[in-house]
Length: 304
Image (cartoon, rainbow, N blue to C red; front, side, top):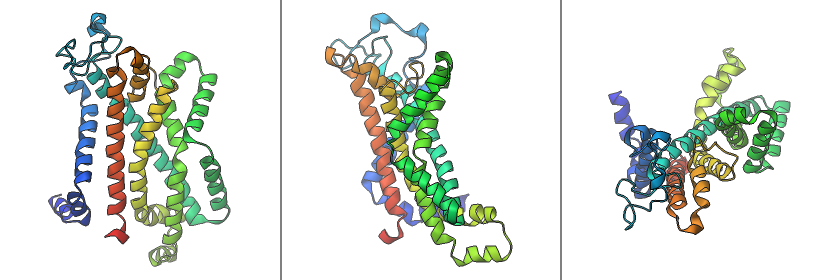
């Protein structure tokens, strides 16, 4: 373990990370956002989902620095007396959960399709890439809305509310796999003609083992970069769906749901209910995207 850590700190990637102040700041901000979301039950000032602790008399409290604000509500409260800061921390948990799970689903589907298309070629390649091309002609939001509408029509309302989180994850994950598939396909078509793959064929290894054990490790670099960038996109997509009212239910509010709730009071003077969740969403997505941009450059051998 110590040897692995030493080699990592001596690597070009760590040197590139230290030399980029923007990347260091982005990493710190991303860690703060993720840490605050994961540890929300332990460090959040209040539990916005504990109905017994909510006080309607504390509704629409402005931020603490306002003359009408309260010290125990740093960023104010919403229409139900929930602490906005605590709601943001709990909401970020849902947004990050949806983003991570959707990206993992996209990666699994994309790698599987890309490996099969790039290594097997022929009819398999043509069919899978035409499916990917057709998928790319439809916006992600439209496909997600279509999937959500089909599920709403097929299931009772109470059942749909229970499965809403999984429906959103499936809709976003299923919408974003073509970018991974096309990247993996291109890298696989290069790798399959190299000597180590030909040697594996000569000794009698199966196609599946060659793809998984030999080709896959050599095509994961671009996948990691795309996954980092797609994480921010998945979080934004979930926020958009929740803002439109077809995302996660109000009982599991994400940052998008908080923005939608606060939007109803934006022009009546309670600006903090929607502005602060919006700023949190921007900071989270921007930090993740900046890390993805750095990782893309750091893993590009032409830029070393």
